[in-house]
Image 1: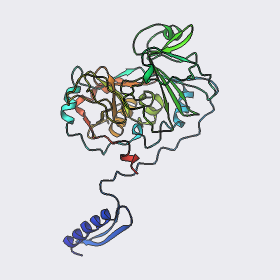
Image 2 (image 1 turned 60 degrees about the vertical axis):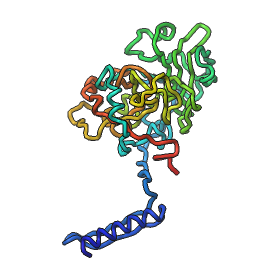
Image 3 (image 1 turned 120 degrees about the horizontal axis):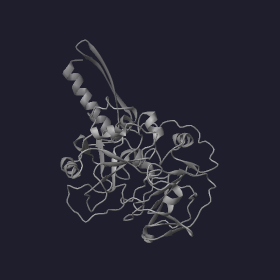
Image 4 (image 1 turned 30 degrees about the vertical axis):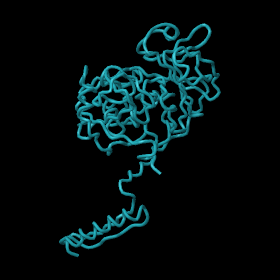
Amino acid sequence: MEPRTLLFWTAVAALAAAAAGGEGEIRVTGSIGKLPVDLTIGAGPVGAAPAPAAPRKRPPTPEITKPVLFNTPEADRIMEALQVFPPDNPWNEDISQRPVHPNSKNIIASCNFRRRYLHYNLDMGFIIVPPNQKKVDVKITAYPGESDKVPMPIPDNAPIEGWPIHGGELEKLQREGRGDRHVLVVDPVNRMLYELFAAYRKDTGWEAAQSSVFDLKSNKTRPDGWTSADAAGLPIFPAAVRFEECERGIVEHAVRVTFTRTRREYVYPATHFASRHTNPNFPRMGERLRLRKDFDTSGFSKHPKAILEGLKKYGMFCADNGLDWLISIAPDSRLKNLDELRRAQGTDFEVIVPTGPAEGPRAR
């Protein structure tokens, strides 16, 4: 077959495959010069997303008989086994091939308002609880209409945001101090997540400004317009960078990031905004950014490289107002060389066109 003829029939086959709406294959054989060609063109809907890669094979969940703090080898083994949300959930979605948002350049420029490089906060620790952990009532002090007012399995040694790297003695920190004071509780056996904002332990029990419950077996989001322990209505625990995943070589989920100026809008999977600004150049809550694929990570140490490679594949969600380019990492002293992250500049990122609830890997 002549080259031009081969190319013609290849194009015809591709169009026919697309028109077939996802059924059958078409094969084209021949040669270009001395090069033999044997093409099989699979039919599929035009614009269909590639099938998601098979999730990493996970070991069985170890038995959990008592609360386990996040910064321990025992927690590492549990987390390695835990599937956090379904594989097709936005947090687990490979967005490396998503198109760049047409306003990406302007949004990135607005994000470089007070800081122009990637930075991190050692903030989001968590505690793992057994399936029979006693549940306690939580008094809601600020957002009762947007809280899940149910008993929660909060153990006595639940860490407050930033502990143990910041805050001193845990029992004192549970009762005193300022800041966002998040508490994150994970039940891996039942695959449930409990999160508190502005939490304090009083003589009468726990109280918090807001409480959220997430089913880690489901893609269900917060009700439209509702906040969570994070301003965007998103969960926090799935976003936190952990030691055991950095040891594996890549953070296999999206992370959370804050910016000084955000827009009075939100985009899936976010459900809430926290701004008066309407400037279209400001990021929305839930805006998704990724590290450009041409960013060279070869000169980075193991842990920061794992984070940066994850930012190429899974990106990060704008989740709250705060310092520009600040991502959340568990306050685990085993994580090393994180200051290298500052070598990634804001201009090394791009905003993508996100997928909706029935798009991307969730398309049916």
